[in-house]
Image (cartoon, rainbow, N blue to C red; front, side, top):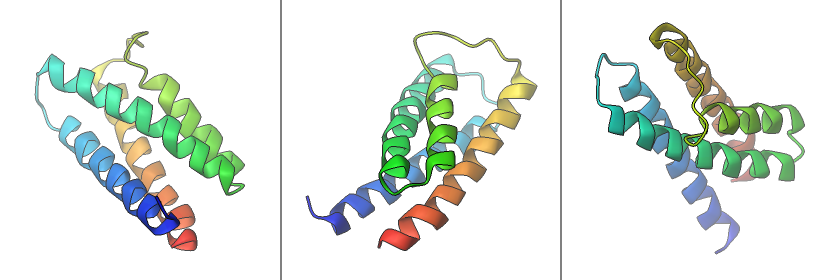
Length: 107
């Protein structure tokens, strides 16, 4: 896949993650959705962290790697609903920063 195709996939992944995190802010009680969210955000965070490290955005890379650990679906981090809302909003902001700093400069 060429670089343009990779950027499209990266932008699509970011959009999916932002939409899923936004839905998680709503007062829903569907456990399966949160498991799917953790799988997508954990794997996406790891993928985007490698992208950030590849373009020398080390700080952003570490934030994304930390996000992958926090959203790890295998080892549960028992945060309350209020803390998860804050973490979700912070993750959305970080993804927007990634989109602006890495995706715009590479396209």
